[in-house]
Length: 141
Image 1: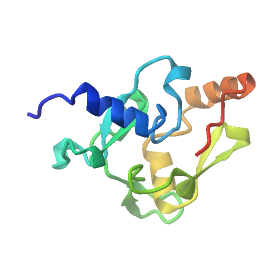
Image 2: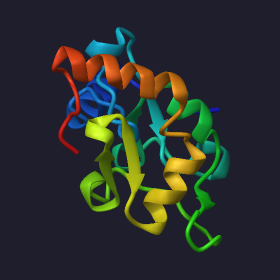
Image 3: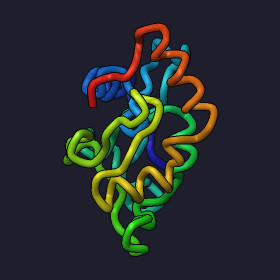
């Protein structure tokens, strides 16, 4: 078992992510709950606590990602690696649709991540609609 992450590491991960979920791009201050630090390659699969393997994730994205590192590309039906927020740009793999209510995968990794993490889960789509009306969303990629 590894030691808990230090407060400094957690702060650096949050700062680097601009306090947004690295996957669904929700902002902590809008959600009103501190996000968690996700191991991109999960510890259960040998992932380490190195800053390059850590990203900020909302609780639902973290829960849905669990120990997965792959997902099914809805276009090809093939299993592919999920989006890696530390080495890939969100805007290369995803785009906003319906004025920011939906996330569309632009690449195999993007589509697999949308599916695996359910980035358009109904409650999140409804919340995005409220955030759009308030002028808080969509966040830049």
